[in-house]
Image 1 (cartoon, rainbow, N blue to C red):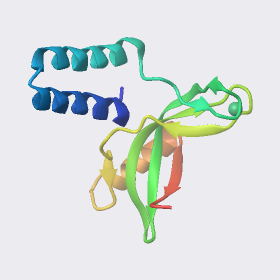
Image 2 (tube, rainbow, N blue to C red):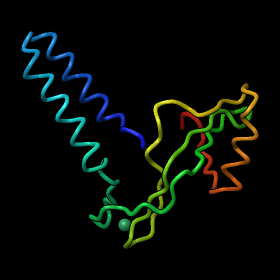
Image 3 (spheres, rainbow, N blue to C red):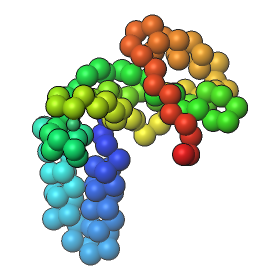
Image 4 (cartoon, helix red, strand yellow):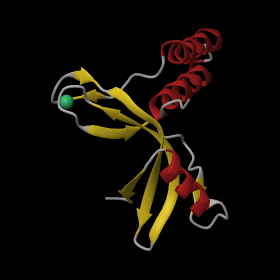
Length: 127
Ligand SMILES: [Zn+2]
């Protein structure tokens, strides 16, 4: 399971706040509540803006392959979600770190294993 960037940011800013205000006990408690809420309920699903509906998980363990100008660059593990109404699909739930990069020995093997076991979605870098 991945913890979303916004959760990490929220927890970090709460810790930062606790240092600034020196109100450590209360702020730490709030940070822990944020974390336990996220793990307890699960991270919110993406929402389709057009249909005002939560998207449904369509497939876990989808490889997200970042493409640079020279070709495949980084591989992330992600989840595919689909809107139950209009059918639009997105990938989300990326971990903070790539699971492999183009210069690593296991890169091509991992990309292939995502192709074999689930699917690979390519995304152009920095567009
Ligand atoms: Zn929709």
